[in-house]
Image: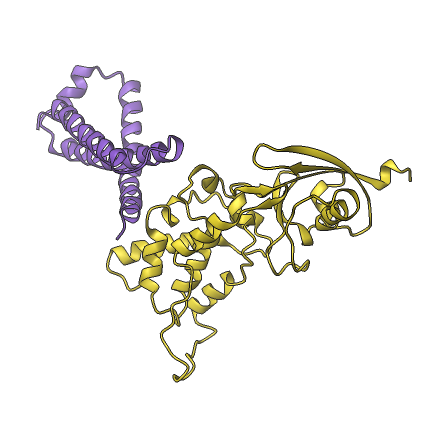
Length: 242
Length: 111
């Protein structure tokens, strides 16, 4: 193979919101991930490149970026998958979040909305109490389990067109978290969570496009969780038990 | 419950009512035109009819609920018009639809 065939043409976003692409040539390697490419650029070509990663094994949710127009976790995305076999890779920061610099976004709005959806556990017991027994086979626990493994990477948030057009929308990740809580027997304020998730900018703003589910790297289904919240809110309105 | 949840329910419930009414209305319009009925002939069949009054009265009421909620979403999401203002204007739009609609039903059926 010639040198050209062994080289990846990488266009990387540099600067803030008004930045521009910079081109790099990176050696092609077998089983190379997108994060490997970014790390190579920073270590070998330009140490000023800003990006974020931590675990490199798909657990921490730090390395989300827009890769060839699609939000992805870069540590678990092979270059082959992202490029579809071509030699051109285009890297940008995640959409719908303020850009700090280059490929690093400010995740503050994402986590603020997480809190606004009351995406945090409210306990009911102290260490003096017995353990809360939860039946793993109960339908509610199974619904919570199906949605619980979110790694907070922000990929669904960046993929969501409603988030992009409506700054008030809490987004799929925060609502997915709310969905796990309203299905959690240990949660002490399920009504409060449902109220937060159904207030302005909550689950009823969702257009059910399903981009969150399509792009979620850990294959969760936030779209189903949001639909579940809508269903529960209707039940609550007609006097049903939440 | 919060307003978004109420509007979400109202829009879907009104859609449920509207769906069969719209189909019947369209079928009726096609039937009337194909049958070559004149306006006078149509009016002679609808005047004084309690049935058509109820049919189109329900149609108008459901449309007056359904349309402003959808329009509110469009204005909020596309133009970013939020707050109380958009709610007031669209509530007024709903009332206008209701008044104009009932006026038309009254002219059609005379009831």
